[in-house]
Amino acid sequence: MAPKALSVRRIHILLAGVLCLFSMALVAPLALYGQSAAIEGTVRDNSGAVIPGAAITVIHTATNLQRTVASNSAGLFSVPDLPPGE
Image (cartoon, rainbow, N blue to C red):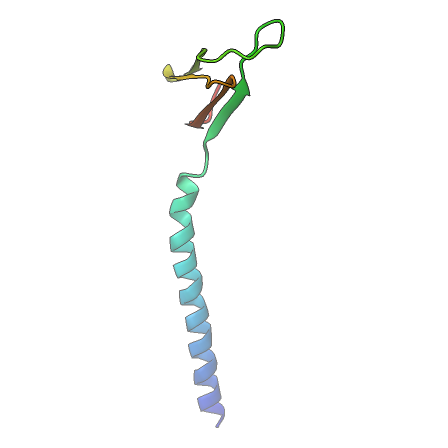
């Protein structure tokens, strides 16, 4: 009986190892895409009133990548999916 119990244990260890490798294979590619940034805000004038339709330009200084968005009717804007940097 001891050899049979030992082989079942080996099968369990093997299955656990395969499950770990499969899990890492699924998670590893996600780590490559994990870093991005976003800038959100409200555009207001000196009196505190919102400014709809204002142009907001974000410039990545290392690559000179530029993204321009406009504020909505409430003065809100969002620039998502920016690469890390200054």
